[in-house]
Length: 260
Image (spheres, rainbow, N blue to C red):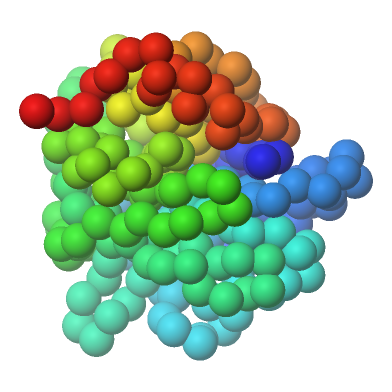
């Protein structure tokens, strides 16, 4: 399966972000067909972390249709990328996953909300979002995908539950801050790949989004042996990667890490 990851520096204005995503999709498709494109956390509109974006996605509203129509226009699945989503009186950090026909593959609401105070960085997502309660996994081509978002990465039990369900590809959309990214991002991603013998697709935000939020970037794809096979260290951009189901099977045959 051939996939692409996109790294963005999303701003508050959704039109600016959509234009960037569209430009990268043009470039990706020009290089040949891909099955899926993985997007970062809050790719549609990045707030300052104090108040929610005014551009909230709701089912079938303008913003929902903007995202779904990208999948239809480019004939590619859009996976992993999250948005600020309004559900009645709740705001959720929701990953919306569409197939190439614009059909919903499922939604996942971020379960573990970020709270940190490091130097000049002080953020508490629970001031904006309500935590999700359930996982999301689904079959796609020859792969079984489990969805997660950013701070979820620090909670390995989510990924072990996915492993028990047969997941072999983990999506981690993210907006990791610079201090925590430098300290832990790659180590955590590689650990999740190694312990679950799964591909990890980590599409992240990068750069200075506003006066309060700077993110680390380093979007990457890690294979089931824990090797980084693609990376975007800094800047906005994309990478195209071919994934091998045979490699997963080979790694899992060589070393059994099934829980007792």
